[in-house]
Image (cartoon, rainbow, N blue to C red; front, side, top):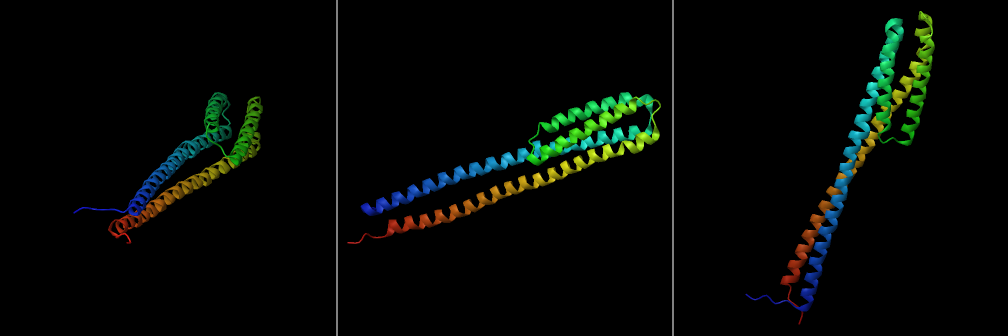
Length: 205
């Protein structure tokens, strides 16, 4: 059986096939872009949120250790242990600073560093008291610890908020990709039916 196409049928069929090709190409490019967005968001959640939260947790543990150390008022062990804790906190601060910070997060982090410096200055004053004054160490240091904990709580809250934003952004990219895929399938079916119509439609005489 010999198939004969009129010039008009050939042009319309070629145009339909070209549309299919361009549609598939555009969809693949958009899918690739959405994949990069999701991949970037997953990296952001791990490097800038999960790791950052871990650094904050470790800082809070070190601060709590300093607080307990002061409350015990053990002058013989206090100086060396406190120096080690300060060094550990500085390392964690540097690691946290290397993550991607939002504008608000950077402001709170600067406040945290200032309050930690104030706490250290107070600790130096305590070291010059021998023996340590119990009233001075337990009550006077509390306002410094409270300020540090307030900043840490604010940073923990920011981690949760920013993680939610990143996850929502990734979900939007996935939803958009799924929607485009469904539209592509519908258009391909429509074009397939159109090509069938063009193939079997007899040219007008």
